[in-house]
Structure formats: structure tokens, C-alpha cells
Image 1: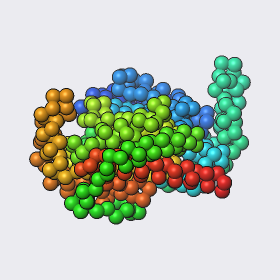
Image 2 (image 1 turned 120 degrees about the horizontal axis):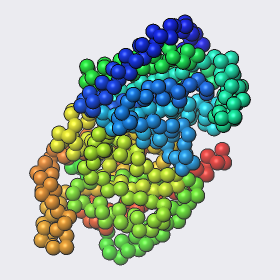
Image 3 (image 1 turned 180 degrees about the vertical axis):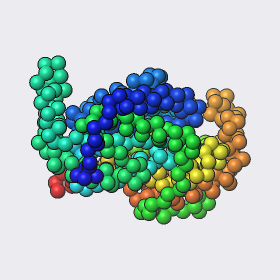
Image 4 (image 1 turned 60 degrees about the vertical axis):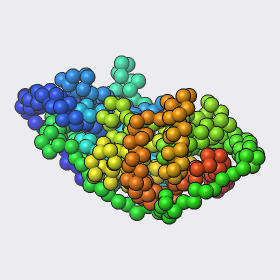
Length: 496
């Protein structure tokens, strides 16, 4: 792509200026239409150091109302963001429906530089290429318009620009050691950029612009942006069809096949609770030192005992090293973004534990059954969720998913107790009773969810909770065992 790039011929400046003026006017007129259509737009500007990425973004936004866009430079990450999955800053930056985000460099620059610096292995480089493809496809399928531009200049042009910047006192600060290193490694960068673009070109096409012709590049970029928006306005939000990848799955029983008679006596419960909580406290210190992130996901029937289960898990943990996220209906700024956004932004740092009290699986349960998303959306979500969780485990996270299970009679007894106990009445709502009426529909959806998303890297555990104490002990045992294994695996990696 870059090796065979042909430079643009010189064009008449006055004609270019007239074209740019007309395109700016059209872009101004598109702003309200974007908001009305609730179309979100991501413009990724990649390219060589000194190719003019910042200047190009400045020209693109010059006539756009500042309320309609944001400019992000996520490639320059704060140290704390290095403790999250590599796509974290890019997912965090996606715009709400109807607005535009301009990215001054992004996921390609991040991956290519780390790879050429030998900060990531060849295998990790390939994994990140796959993750970028999945990231872009998920956003596209959710209705995002994505424009990817690479601003190209040759090695001689880059040298002249870097020298010019370095020799002027007011701009010398803009030339970094990273820029000079890239110039020295120009051929390696060109080859790796080429490979990256070829392997991420199918879902969202790359557009290479001639950075040596600044005004031409502005006209071409603006024309691409206006055309992309017009296409989106004319055709409406893209709605991707369900896409299924073969994930290694763990065979799961149907809920109706689970033995809910399992229980534990009080003496054994007290002894086991103390032992397991003590061990979990020790493991929390170890995973913090080893920087292993842990994500615990709780789903289950209303009144199944999720809250009490979570409290017994959280009690022995250092409060500075964990968070519990109760997930309710999305707020407006959340529902106006891709549905996984609100979970990406709540992920733990390395070494921390994050507990989700309800999760992204709402997409294939309540959103599916209550009509909050169309059929294509929830059917597509099984694969998207498997991809998301694979990204987390590729990052090194321990991901454990618990379905807290009770039978229908036990739920009724607990609902009735809550209704008749003043201090517990806040726990029971009309919605709980309405959901109970759809028990059979939910059970069908849950069975399908368990079958399609219990992957080997992020398995589901059905926790028998007619006896809440038994459920707490079983959950703690699973967590302790998984963390012990994660610590052992981490030690083996260091030794290897």
C-alpha cells in the first residue's frame, strides 16, 4: 500500500481553496443532520511523524461547532492507562450518537511502535491485529461511521520537515527522540504500517493521502469525511448480521438439570468461610504484586442471593484494590454508545479486582426479552461478548462468571418474605414480579447464553443457591482455586 503509493500532482491553489470552502459549508450543514440521525462518527488520523496530522485535524474541525466533536490523542497515554487492555483508551474515546471523535493517531501507531520497540512479541502483535479487526467490526455493526486516514510522506520529506522544526526555537520541542528513531527506522516502519493496513482493511477501508501536498490532503480528507457522512445519512445506521466464530466451549447443563438440593451445615459453613476468606485475602496481596487483573461477573435470578454472595467475597479484600459495580439500566450517555462501552470504562487496573453485579449479559437476557434491542443485535452479541472476554484474558485477566441459581418456589418464598418484612421491602419491586411472570422465557434465554458463551478462557459456573450458605462457599472455592492457578501460571511464565 505505501510502497507503491503514487504522489499527487500539483493542483491550482485557487481551485483547491474553492473546493475546500464548499466542503466546509457542506460539513457545517451535516452537523444537525448527524444529531437528528444519531449517527456517531470516528475519524482516525494516522501517519508519519511530521506528516501534518495535527494540522489536518485543525483544518477538518475549523468550521464545526465545538459542541459536536472531540479531539483525542490516546497514543500519548497516561502511565495509569498502561495498566488496562491496549484498546481501553480507544474504546473509552468513542463518541455518543450524533457526534464526532477525531483521533490524533491511535491503535495502529500504538501497536506498530510497541512491536518495533520489541515491547510486544510477534504473537502479541498478531493478537492485537485480530483485536483491532474485532474492535472496528463491532463498532461498525453497532452503527458507527469510521474513517481511517493515513498521511504519507517519503523519508526525504520527513527529514526536511523534522530538521525545519528542530532548527526553529519555537518548534524544536515538537521533535522527539521517538520521531528521530522512526526516521532512522523508516523502512521497517513502512513495511509494518503496510502489513497492519492490509490486515485491517476489510471491515473499514484505509485511505492513504499525500502528506507532501498539504492543501490537497485537506481537500481529500474533507471530501472523504463529507462523503462518509452523506452515505451514513442516506443509508442509515449499519446493522451487522450475526457473526459466529468457533470458540472452544465448555459444555453446560440446562438450568432444569441442576441439582438445587445441595446444602451445608452451619458449623462447616463457618469454618470454611473463615478459611477461604483468609486465603482470598492472601491471594489479593499476591495478585496485586504480580499485577494480575481479576474480573468477577455475577448474574442470577432475582432474590437468588447475589448481594450476600458478593459481600462474603468482598469482605476479606483490601478496599483499595477492588471495586463493585452494580449495573442497572444504562444512563442516557451510556445508551447512546456501543453497549460494551460502559463495561470497558469500568475495567480494573492490573493487580485489582472488579466485581460486576450484573453485566454485559443483559444484552442477551433483559434487552432481548424486553425489546430494548433488535433481534440482530442480541444474536450478534454472543460472538461480540466472546471476543470481548478473549481480549480480557489475552490481556492476562482472570475472568469468572457466576450464574446464581434457585428454583421458582424458592424465589416466591423469598419475594414473599421481602414483601412482608418492612426493612427488606426496598429489595422487592413491581418489576421483580413482572420478571417472575416471564420465568420460562428467561430460562430459555439463559440456557442459550450459557451454551454459547461458556468459553474455556472465561467459563460460566452455575452456583446452586437454594441454600445461600452453600452458594457462598462454592463461589469462594472457585475464586480461590482460579487465583492460585493464575499465580502459578505467572510464576511459570517468569521462569520460562
